[in-house]
Image (tube, rainbow, N blue to C red; front, side, top):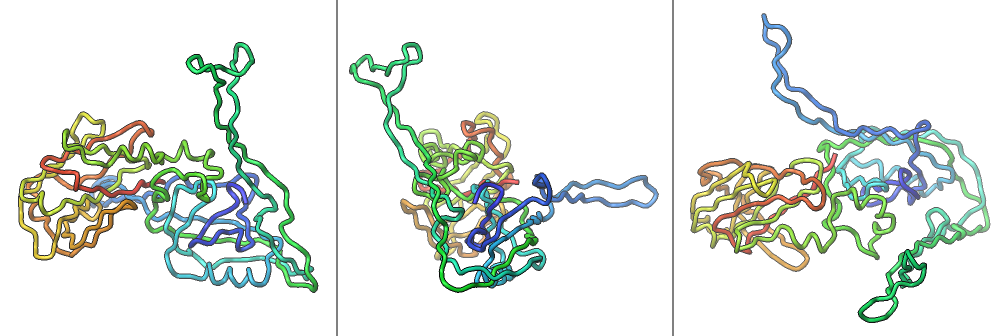
Length: 371
């Protein structure tokens, strides 16, 4: 399965269902943005309308599919997978770093003919191709001499690691005794994303061994996702500067969730946001206050615009988790407003979140949002 041919819905890949995504003509069609809805009002006696702004509506994905050897068990599985009313993840093979939350928009439509063919046992290769990766150490060639380059200090040849992607044709199935019914045809699947934006699938770029690593050279540089090394440099509070370095690799401003432990709430807390690291564009100030019984801190959630109590917070190597209590503390905001993080321009651009009276125990959580 290749780019623009496969997709994953609810954790099931289209190739496992025996279907392939196709275009309706010579080209694929794609809406780059969700529907835009204008907020307007008509006033009797005045020309035109008053414009109060715009919002993005839901996003629809209408996929055309084809199949030429759909087995009876796969046909049944199609009914099960695409007969759900639940909202599930949708990931396209060509951009696996983006995850949409969708539900089936309308009943799946199929048009087909049936045949009896010899039974087959399907192999492990989805498309009859086995892909393997090998990394070899090779000498670096001097461009002027055409000979292997020599390290001046050690006198040894300079080498580099070269990654090769080998392709081997394999038989994707074996013939068994008897016949089975198979379907050939085409169809349509419609998905609706009521939240019209995709969230980042990965926290950092996939490494060798991850199923998304193969082919990542086609999209990694344009995804906005950082390497693990670069990611370790952001979102950590620096007590010397009272700052967090922030990076938003998505296409849109995004809300964040900031955990502040109880010990820091004995003093006033001040947040200042600097998208270009210099100029402050947003602020939020909280007075000192005492938490309700059972709360160990607060979560400033700028998406829901709530300052909510946290009853349990666990910080581990694999990531932090928390449980909110439902106690609200918005009344302790003295000035400013709950703001969002602007997208950064490239992987080397950074923003700054200034947090006065903070500590390393402060933690921030947010996703990247994509069109």
